Amino acid sequence: MDPMPRHNTAAAIGGVISKLPTVGTTIFTTTSALAQQHHAINLSQGFPDFDCPPRLIELVTTYMRQGFNQYAPMQGVAVLRERIAEKITFRYGVSINPDTEITVTAGATQGLFTAIATLVAAGDEVIIFEPAYDSYAPSVELFGGIVKNVELTAPDFAIDWHHVGELITEKTKLIIVNTPTNPTSRIWTAYDFQELIRLTHSTEIFILSDEVYEHIVYDGLEHLSVLSYDALRERSFVITSFGKLFHTTGWKIGYAIAPEGLTREFRKIHQFNVFSVNTPIQYALADFLKLKDEYLQLADFFQEKRDHLATALQQTRFRVLPCEGTYFLLAEYSKFSDLNEFDFSRRLIEKFGLATIPVSAFYKRAINQSLIRFCFAKKKDTLEEAVHRIEQINRYFG
Ligand code: PMP
Image (cartoon, rainbow, N blue to C red; front, side, top):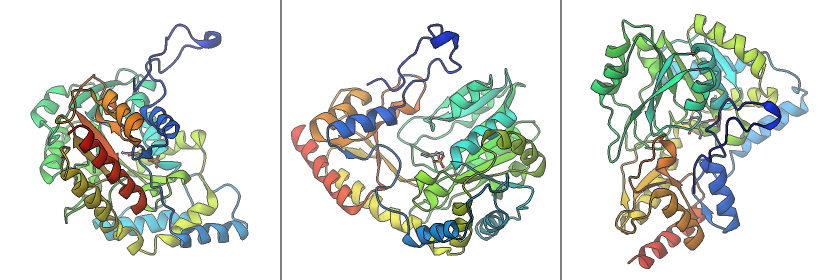
């Protein structure tokens, strides 16, 4: 199973030269299609298989019925930006101006894309830590940027900051941070941030921090945000997503936070990209954000699911890697099989009806660490069936 089928640049349709010649159908699409074909339990793609809170749906419906159905202001509705600013002050103790520093986006992906469009020009170098969420590199390349990957490896995926320092040149424009990290499920430590500050403080390097899993951190650990570090904040975009916060990945709403000057440039592009995002949902989210428990209990809610899956995997010959945040769990299978990750995960779908994602899909270079990623943002029944299939796998290879 090839994660990124290669397409021929020159053999373009009707003379269109592909701007992303090496990008094909993503692993998520191909895996989900295969999972459907084999009626597999799908722990591959990162979204819940349970519904969002009914109160949130009621609020959206109410605003629709009240006629909030036309364009929202380009930067997002005022009341939502105010609630976001309040949430940030409550959570990180910093003050953000809702008028000049917050823009509501069509999900985190559009926020990331627009921030990259704002910052990256041809020849600029961008440092990305791998394994990485799949939108970063193509977005950088689309604007002529050059990706410099820092390859992190199992089991701890620790960052070698000396190596990062070596990669920095006068062309380095941007460093992309993702904490808690998809797919490793690790979080950045205070030391990581100290090092990032040390390497960038007297430079003109910008930071793009993807914090969509900011509220999903386990075992009493704390998510550290770029927003908490003044030295970084003045040169950073922080991006997050309501899809992860309220189990509404299909609504595609998030926001971008950046200092006024950066936000001004970001909005110039945002207005021609989407102009504005869904009006009634923005009003509903503004109301719903008042219910702090809805997001403060997320970690406990998902920790129970993580423990359910991890406990089951630990009783087999899978080796479970530490999971500090996100709703993903990595497991190593070398005691079962010598197959590479793509072939092993395909085997699990076809033979056992269990869909996961090979971790190598998140690296540019072909790498095999015998690791697969499970998404545990699933109902109890789904996880129980998955556990049942994991036990069958263990017996089969036994
Ligand atoms: N960043 C990361 C690290 C993610 O895992 C995801 C979703 N899987 C996104 C961004 C995208 O979020 P959204 O659906 O709001 O675009």
